Length: 515
Image (tube, rainbow, N blue to C red; front, side, top):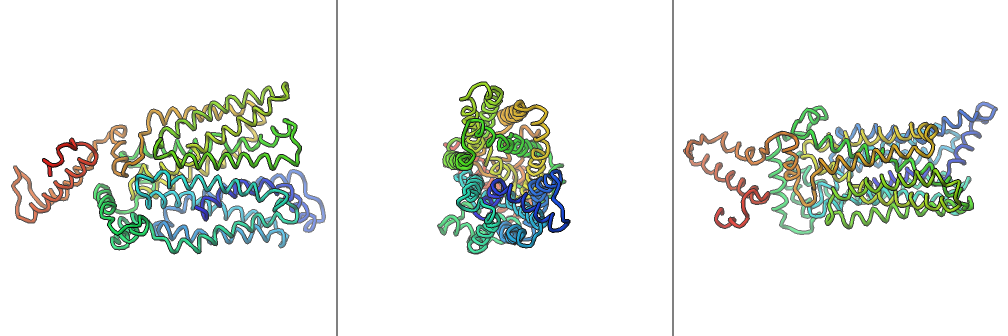
């Protein structure tokens, strides 16, 4: 998470502190090249491209995920991804020395690609290496380190550290440290055991990986769970995005991921950063104090993400998401009221800032991290890469849309612009309340089965397990052609009973009788 999620969060906040110094550098470079000052419109355009191209890079990175993990695996992709972070760190840190603002723009694009890959591959890796009892908590490390990255970006941007005209390039050079740390540590961690067993057919490697992650030698239960999921799949190869869209039994899982990832970006959290400094200025705070006060936003963000990680296995994914989006709708409504009246009452800006802090806490309590956990849980192994590719594409397109459109919306609607986010958050909460089942402490097969009814397809998990036996044995009143067929049939009947017991389709009190 340090070499992946942290870098994404860090890059969200790192450009805020040195913004004025970077624009000054653009002007100086322009004068050196063309012997005239840069125009206001040109510097605004260059700065907008520098900021927004991060999302374009993220989209490109997300679109490559399916191909990368097929060739390199989960761990291999994360390792290779560090090359992008190191290249971006060099370009961004040396751009001023080289007198090239193009290096900064290209560097932002490349670090965006790094984030696009890591935001899809890391949650997939964490979900596949985790026992189902703690899968949500482990998955929340992704969100925790995003928030921690935002906070550290704010801290390092303070004037006493790197937030000075002579030091701002060190802010970007810092990007190399998490990448180097991951390069040093990740080679000693195993590959995803599910990937090894189901896609590489390496049972010995999968067993060693499970033993390393779980710290015990007997991992037969985990291996059997993966085998059961493998038998239940319609295909043993990695499915394409087009195949996922065509798959009727995964229709509502896909719709759910698209809705949740859209709401993740369109819920308006990125937009409130436009208002934070202005609200603090109107509240009467000294401009020199504002960078220190805004640290509270990063601190609240990290604290809420940690608390969410601690309670997710007790509360569940569904309640955290519904509560988070509902609370955001409430606080966006209050913020709209407070902003509308803040010029009339001297104490109103304090309420506005309090609403912003509560908005951030509501977001990080569920919507900030659970969508990535859900994307990994709602799909079988063969469809998971395509699902993350679609989720990443939706995520980055929505991110780019907010950055591009919100300034125009803000200009047209002023303080009432936040009412659009009220609608998005409320709609997301209602959808999740109606459609999403709870996924905590369930196997991937059980989660898939819970969508059978809404997808309008019968639950054929156990029937598929019997099919292998029926292919080799003609059953008519249990009349089979040979003893080997009877052995195969007996094995699959036993497996069906076991699965039925685990999913409570048969009364557990009859366990002894069935055995």
